[in-house]
Length: 155
Image 1 (cartoon, rainbow, N blue to C red):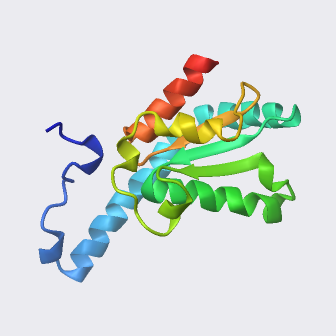
Image 2: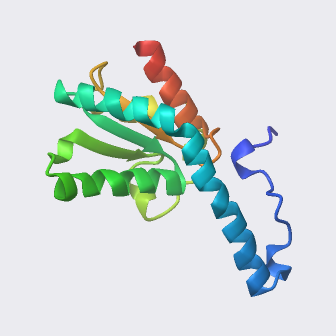
Image 3: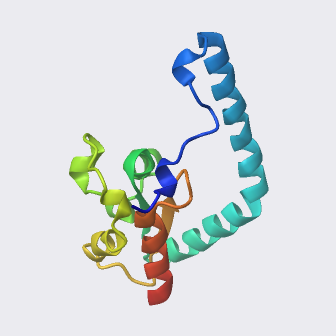
């Protein structure tokens, strides 16, 4: 059976044997990596924001695709855009592997379906006017990676 990259062991073994302080410190040390990763990605994030703004000015929409917690975060952000920024609900759409049922209850193996993201996006008549952002903690989730690749292939 093929080893799943998204479920590989972390370098933090035996978490259940750590003291509460040690566990919290380990989490905090991992969290510190986030700000540097964002800092290093700012030129790319800036380009994405500017491109998304231009597409949306011309009638395009923003889609988030993700699986599990990553998908839920995309849905959360999409649902907050209308009340926070006054944009229509149809402008920012979050999609999760496994469909809306996966928001509250995990749909096992939906993240491994390499065709599912495009099927989900097609339900919204996605076009080259739209922007699709993939969210994946591992950067390797098949639903996200193949969804983005399929979008690139379609232009």
